[in-house]
Length: 403
Image (cartoon, rainbow, N blue to C red; front, top):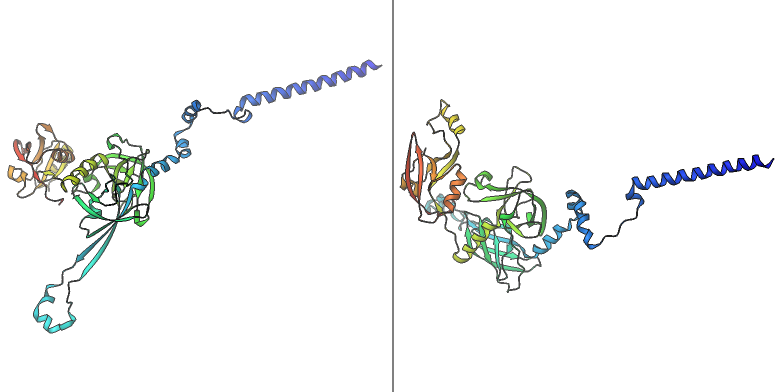
């Protein structure tokens, strides 16, 4: 009579064992599917750190390591300065007010002195060396009667403009502050690539010590494309926010090295700013420090990049005044009177094809070629005039001003 009861107990016990075994299997399988939730965090050794970083996505790495901006700014921040300028403008009095007849008639009601107005400006800059040389934009300090340089620590010094170059929009200012000044580390703009980090530091709109972050949007953006035809520059374009007051301040790479000088913006656009490459700025700054000015050779032509398509559009227009050769080159719109080009016989309507045997296909290329030449150098310029080509010898001369 007890055997049936024992058998029933064994069956129940066996059922419990099966249930327990099934639960263990389910738990183990869950651990195998979701190891990140089941296993404890592994300890990280110094040698494994690079592996973990490599496993992160670029976006997560950028967000997670935002301190690279802090490190870059801390490296250069104390060398960034604010530049305040003052300039007095005297306005002419209407000539009829100086006539004795009107003075007798109106008496003391006429103004006795020429009215003047004091203009104030604001910009940025950075210290090049411990002796107190500061690099900034020419338009920040040009024609200023007084220049005041303020350091990040609050110290202020009177600045003396040592040299200005309007063509490249660069200037060097000297302050006397001892020989223990912070210096901005300079990088190389030749190593900059599109997509690199770009950090702008300066005093936009009077908000001191402002930092903005972006990337390098493009390289070698010509001043003509930017809309600054009186300059000879190829800019670094960035989407790091640049505003009035940033002018002259540094554009940094991710390591805190200066790669450019923030210079211009497009008022009709957002997220488009321009900086002078530091390699160009270093060469100009050395000349300004030594000579106080920079000599730029020029030919004396206003020009336009010409392509066969543009020429064809002109030639098929019944209202066109002239027929243009359908070639690649530089079309001469105007020849400046008494310029090297005028003396050499260059005419309006000529198409410049070659200089010293090298093909010229754009206005920017011709401008850079002339900029890299020497003052007084004779350039062999091949032009097409109508259906004929001519070889002209043009001797470069010094560009007197940006206009």
